[in-house]
Picture: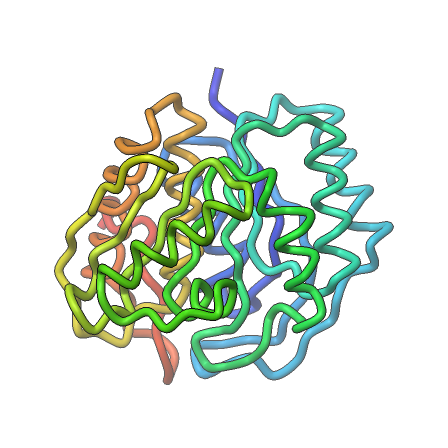
Length: 262
């Protein structure tokens, strides 16, 4: 039977990030993808122009409907927007005993628009991160969660240790913003570090990269791969999606989730 995975995130009307990117990446990685929409954004490759947050009652109803009927192997969270929604997701994940929870702490869009309200960070740290099998912040998100400055791999290691202490089982710091060894990601499990070296790609077709990467990892974990292998496969997939990115729109174009079909 095909493995079933769930994304809980905001909708990107431009199709390059958010729930749309999650569904594409999860499908491209061999799973059946389902969604709970937390926010509706008016968005394109240039930026976010409006946000409408879905009522928590509807978010809860979406989660209940999915888990009542499907065998959810893994769950990935993205844009949660508000404090009440963030706390709700934590309660529902605990209620249903979700073991493979991948928390992508989406805070700011590529164009600089706030996607997580500042007062929600407390609830992210308190209610959701401690439930995470894997936390996947990029450098700015890791800096915001820890209060540290991260420019080098040494600083990334110290940040990973601090994030691990928040209660998650694994931390993957995505290194696209590193000034030293850019595109090198760092996994920490509380004992050991593992580096995933990559080649920095100078391109504008990077919209939705973080969503795509975390979703690919989620799919690979659902398929039963150990975490180190799941990340390796997902990084290779995401790199190819960037290399074959789509030059559409007039801003940061999206990655090509189905590059292998063309």
